[in-house]
Length: 303
Image (tube, rainbow, N blue to C red):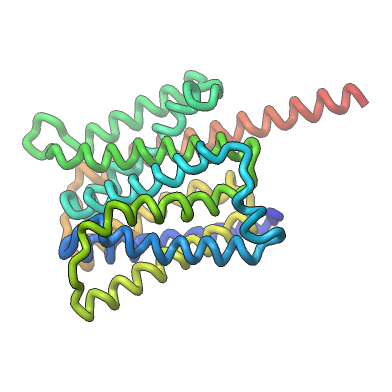
């Protein structure tokens, strides 16, 4: 059951984003030393165990969690997420955390743009204007034609597009399935798929890197645990804008720990993209409240 403690929800969201930023730093290190598929495979084994343990504790256990009105869509969601993680980790290696997250920040705008064709939602001119402004922000970050642009930036764009589609499908399945079911399929569908690929790229790891791998698994599970608590404490619409803090934390760690550069164009571009993204979230909340009010008025008129 969702609570109404927004302050607690925001605090938990900030902590979750910090944990995920640490996870990104570790992923960047390990993927620089070992094959990305192997790194993600080991991470997903632990994540799948975490998902199963959470599902087993819920009412109805694993059987209830696996019960879905649209299992094929749920399975595709799980495959899409594990693929997105692999692509994003590759982006970390080629671009660094700062650049990769700066480009990835456009995914809420992609969600808004694709919500029409995928979900049949109406996208008004205000949100289209925000999407256009966000696109300008991405161009500021990439600086095409200036010699700064690198084809590796397309990897982060692909990850943003994949995650946007994953988010849209999550909304779609929520019409018939519970959040517990969606969470179950996220881990259970992804683990076997990445194992079929990652097992061919197994290579020995040094003892210190096994320690980093263990920390990667723990931060991944802990981050998702915090997200569960976030949405138990507060409404998603109230806390979702604070998910942008992962960009802030990841960029800070990239500069302080990995010695990455923070170009002025990136700061300006990210400010534009985040501003446009926050506006689209605000417009979605306005539209949702209007729909709820209209439905309540209709219901009241019939009573």
